[in-house]
Image 1 (cartoon, rainbow, N blue to C red):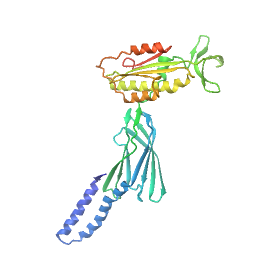
Image 2: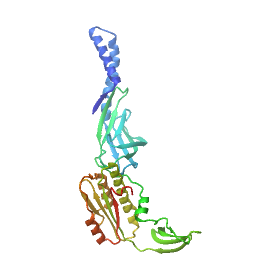
Image 3: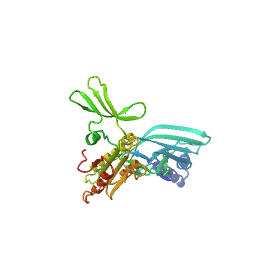
Image 4: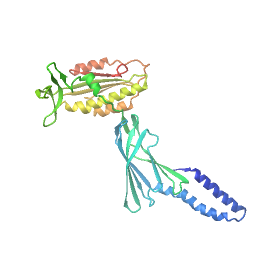
Amino acid sequence: MKIRLFPGSVFFLLLLLTCAAANSIHSNPLLLLAGFLFGPLVWNFWIPFPILRRIEVKRSLPDHVFAKEGFPCEIELVSHSRSGFSCTAIQPFPGLPFLFQLEKVQEFTPRKGETHRILNYTLEVQSRGVFEPKNVHLSCSYPFGLFSWTRTFRVSAAPLTVFPERVDTNAFWERAVMPNAAEGIRSLDGEFAGLRLWTEGEPLRRIHWRASARHGQLLAAKQDGPQPLSFFLIADLTESDGQNAEKNISLAASLIWDLCRELAPFTFGAETAVWLMLIGDEKAELLKSEETDDFCRTALEKLARVRPRDGKRPAVDPSAALEEFRQTHPSPNILWIGPDLHDE
């Protein structure tokens, strides 16, 4: 444990030394004053030590989150001292880019001499990466704040993986892949036609639909059979501007999330294939959903760790992987994210 002296404690010590010096020269009533001052001084110095020594700290965090999105965090303090938490102040996870908002505090005493305090926070991480929120600082200054003891507690060492920030991809899907799929197309005779997910009793089903412009009446509906889903996403992070590289990483992570969570569940048992070629600083990696366990999480974890590629390094040619994908998957969809297309 570390001890810190406040300005008030320095003045307190000087006053005590002055009284002791005056008494050493000759008998002086200041000795009585020194006695009164010495008691609180010892109290300030000694009491925080056993309080902090008898505290346990536990924390509860998810193992993965998205950057700049709030998530719950619970920190439990257990005091085996009769003084409880009367002098303590907490600083969770010092040195990490976390934003804290305290939501609720609960305190209860299940048995004599044992006090539990549960602190519920909403945390937000400002950048992607892998962090180890394992240190919690507790400080104690009691009762006049002349001395402050600080103890660092080591809690569960499980790392926290922060995926890249999610961005709105609706405009991207409508422009690049599925134009007019949601709103439909108005024909010359005033009718709409398009492709939608239709709810009819059980799960969502995909149908072709056509409705009149005047009354919105469904004129024709034809249910599709199982449709294969095949996407090849190439994320070229060769970028001299670090800000644009981070935007590309966020877009790639958001598209992977959409493919895994929004599109793949509605293929109704048809073949689903998502490939990701990640061109980062170290090397070009190719992930295939058919060969990778928990493809979505693995891809997001790699995007959380990847570093942008230096623009001075030679370009990577993805043509061989593209040709393999075209030969093995019918009607492939190719998505490119890179320096030339970052505005898309």
